[in-house]
Image (tube, rainbow, N blue to C red):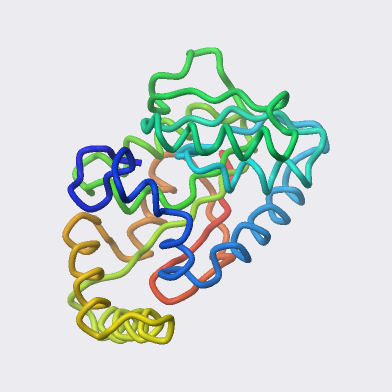
Length: 233
């Protein structure tokens, strides 16, 4: 998660309202986490060390931790505020003993830190495709054992395509169904687009292969959001 944005500032008001807003923008947010949990559970052993990149907020850690009692987790995020939210949720769920929370970035992890699996959900779309996306995926690949599984979920799309325009209109309608006015929905999407570096899903798959992953078909798709499972070569 990035901290230097005006709208997506996880240390300010956006971080305070993230849990509510993400469920409005992404109606299947919780179902996506359940599917991701089941898929990672099918891919990893019953005892595993799992890295969660962009762990602030705690949704991934709480979902995975509550269902996989033999897993231990390292959650890393640059936002101190979001990590504090995660810490509180983990304590309420009684999961804090199996989770190490770190403030920072994946490339700052100790070199000897190697994991059986990793999750990077709703992070990649914040990074520009000027080496930023590639760099994060390279760092995740470097932290995984051979055969290790990566779950990746990101907003995706080619903004100049008809498909993107239809999906964007559908997302605006979804926000209006949830009580926003047309002007409010358009303003929110306009701000979000200004700070997200969307690329087509084919580009994300290309980057995954470039850093050494075998990519399976997407396991999740809803409007502008897509999810993949990939395995380290």
